[in-house]
Image (tube, rainbow, N blue to C red; front, side, top):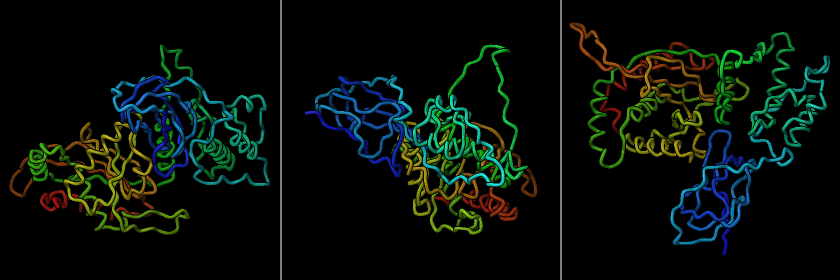
Length: 427
């Protein structure tokens, strides 16, 4: 008898969008074979088969919004079903605008235009409005604000306009019409690049677009300062190499990132103002008594930031093992939204790629982010002669509303002292 296969626990989201259907009716699947791909505001996830069997009927389409418990397909269980590769071609069914729902919750309400002047969005072209790709709720929302959907760029799948797009359009229009009270800039001109040669248009992934919006918001609303420093990790790297050899057979990769997480926790204890967030009003500081460290991970679909929780209570080896697990989950699109929430401070490490220094953007609502570049053997004066020392470049960006320059320098100096004490980090 066919068995109903439903969406498992995917975190705290009410709905996520189906972006790929990886199987068809009649396919034989093994346990853990991927059935569909779904996309939240922060990550793409693949939903696996809970057991082996034969797919008898597909119950979802690309563009559908699903939540925990939503029916995916019917599966006729078969203990003997062999592992079979699933098709990598997504169904081509296009959701109708009327069946779509907004892909992301609205982060805040949009202020209505002042009554003493006309709305900068008040003119609606009914033809372009009717042709816009948006759900009924978004169309109603746009009309309430006087927004012509034909002028709004959609960030949803296949260019669908969602509520956040409408709000962004209104905010930009208001900023440009209030004489400089907002961060208004001239719109980018439309350019036909093909006039100079062959071109190819490539759609940004949803993660790319959302990350871009968040980073742009953080960059223009947070007064950034970046403090540069170096840490002597000569002894630390020697210890790391010896531990890496010791734990290699246990399948645990001891990386510099594990030591950095321990060092950042020590820094947050030493300077608690870094382990804080501004409240929504910007008038109060919320100090945190927990230590969750975010790790920026580069994936083919874009940047994601999974969080190592309660890093203060874990040993270095525990953290190293967890880093291996979350990195693999990120590459396999298995991260859940809850895996990327609740961070206190983020580490962005480019040491494995290269570079000397960079200016990372604060991952709000955090107030600081630590950037790490490639270490380099450098001649260092010890008072009598130069000796070769392995130096690690640090780039600390912070919110100047919360952290002043003196504390920024204190933090990187403290990090330098902690990283120089190799044995102190192995606990």
